[in-house]
Length: 215
Length: 217
Image (cartoon, rainbow over all chains, first blue to last red; front, side, top):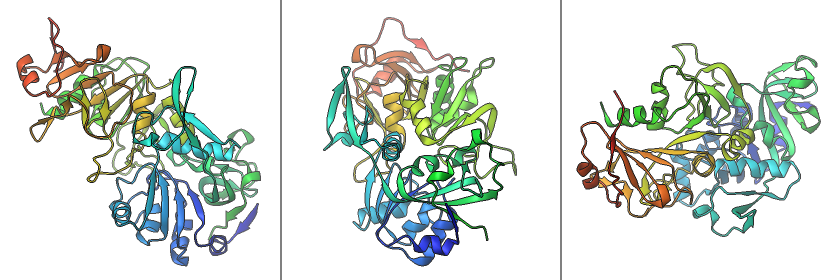
């Protein structure tokens, strides 16, 4: 784990990178990293996240700045800009049921090829997918997801990069931290080692690559 | 009493002590306002909370504590938080006793369409498919008609949310269940006749000898 300035951290992300971004309607999204992505004007990004938030908020800022060429998300209903860009053919959107999306990410981080889920059987979601029967029940085969970068927001990070999350801001964060080549953390608070007790560490420092320095 | 209140009050009567329940956005959210006295129900928000409470008092909100629609909520004593993988493990894994969701269409066999109108409304399914296929009991809160047309239809014309039939439909006119895959009228709203329900319904309804009146005040 390395401490890094925000501009240097984002400079490591090339145009066209795939990014897993924490947050649920922007709660638990790494706001400083998103702002810096916009400032540096990274283009052609693939975003894997729960949703695209709202215009001008959280991931909605990336959409507004037209930096995203593909979004793999469960919900875009509260961001008309995402829908407009999708309809205009400027933004490719893959809609995935939320529980399937998070499990595909979890599988990617846990060394699994994918998951079997009954969610989506008998709906549009099953189109083009392999279906298997296990124990008499039908499941869809949903492949694992992996990304170049995970952009994580934590409530607490200690000096080593152990992380803990708060309230409903945990959501996708600890799961995406396992599923990307490079993990960049935007922490609300950086605290001495030991402040987060071993039992309360939710993401171990060993999987964190960069912790963004406070300003 | 307006249509939404009739629906929310009637669905609240399905709550039992100790249940874990997920409420969707819209009319379902209002069910929390009518929990019968003397029972304790845990509400789950799929963004990672069990023990979701009311909207906080002015100035008492926390930016990291919201419901699945991103609105500020409180957390009740005994609440707990978790990540999205556990949240959907609870939903799919047989741990969620009941979900209440909105509906665009329910058909005569209990099939549900509630996530998209192709070409018009493509918001994404969010957690709806997992909830509708994973919860132990699926209750739909839906206005009986839209623009004069029945939403309880012969066969869904909109894309399905799940192949699994729902368990109970509550509208401002009626309570309908789907035993053996057939829409069956269980109750009518106070002041609404069986004939009125039938007239407002496209799907063929099985009418038992006795149809109760919703026990709502």
